[in-house]
Length: 156
Image (cartoon, rainbow, N blue to C red; front, side, top):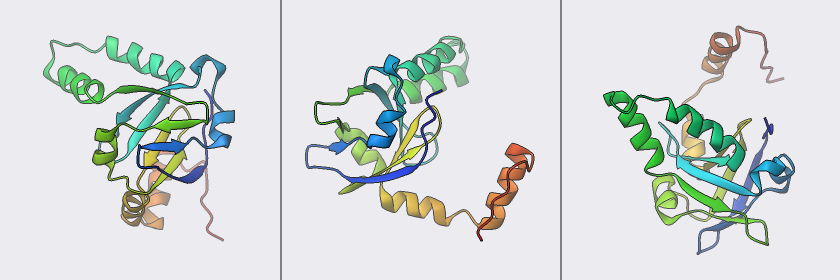
């Protein structure tokens, strides 16, 4: 697992190109060859950016989904219909497809968030709105549910 982590904000140009953060690039596996698959987030208006080698794992899981099941078709349809392959250019920029920019309401800035095996790409305004819906108490409760309370969040 590449171990993407951290948050980075960059400007996006009028052609949809944005500098890919150097610290995230250092965590990129050589197997990814600076190629990615970009898809829409499931319930949040953000984008998921998977390095090519990690996207192969997603495709393996998708190949095991029963296409004769209604829910199986829905999962494949909503994930794959908006999946696009992108690569870093010589200036280490990534071009975000126009329909993905519209979906995620990206304007002049982009926030990259390392999520372990993939990267979330957000409009700063959408990220702020999503963050405002989560209180410190609910974060602590979520950590306890997901991690069994093994990690503490200390705001001090």
